[in-house]
Image (tube, rainbow, N blue to C red; front, side):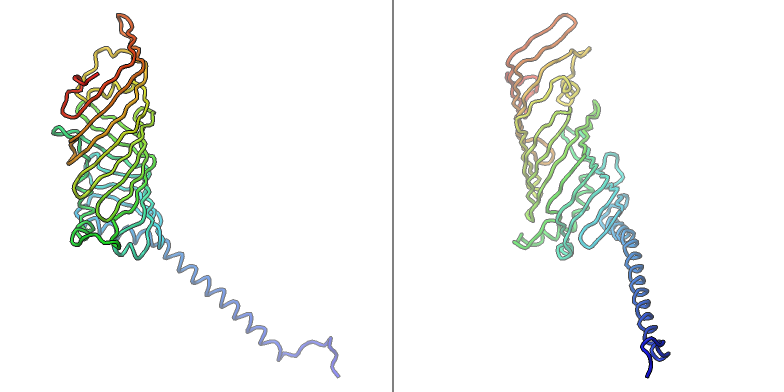
Length: 311
């Protein structure tokens, strides 16, 4: 009888090696699949850039720029972005695009979050116009044309359903000089071309709250500036934009004003504009002395001279 302490026979050895070989093969195959997946993930941004470049050329925007930082089946991180080569054309540092594949095949994305957006409004021919608007319309022409071919239905989707903006800047380019306004905001769109938006503007480090709505197909835009208090002195640099040249030397102005405004735009022109102003107290320091003004009220309406506003 064989003792239990005796060594196992060689016949028992091969199965042990076979199990170990299978384990090694499984691990090697898993590593191989991991390497393939990693390689695809590394290649996806470049493949995405190639596709975007081809689309921009197809839509008549060969001088635009759109880099791809990261790409997944449900999200793309793009940047930097530039729409055309014209000076002042819309640009952004990054754009995070969230989408569903079934909606993406229909030409729609769920949300776009922009950082470092820069827009320029240029004053020309008695109107403020967005630089690069023609390029933007060309970029959206394919989807817009498809949407216009049939009436909106509950299943129809806009090209972008929601846009949010952070750390953005609006440049007002006027023959007398450029002024910059920092802003953040959000807008939602529907398939019929309607938009609802809100924004916080900080032209002089004072927050101004904006609400609005519009119809992109008809080119209509309604904007309301909620009652906001702002300091007067920084606004002296804005007077040339209203056709008013401040005196030289510019007087020192201390005080604040509450502004409330409503405007309706069509084709870049203010068809209906009303601005109500109320300054409880304003101190103006001139070389010849000081003026103390109390309870100043005024209203400016479109089609009137700012200097002839009622007070």
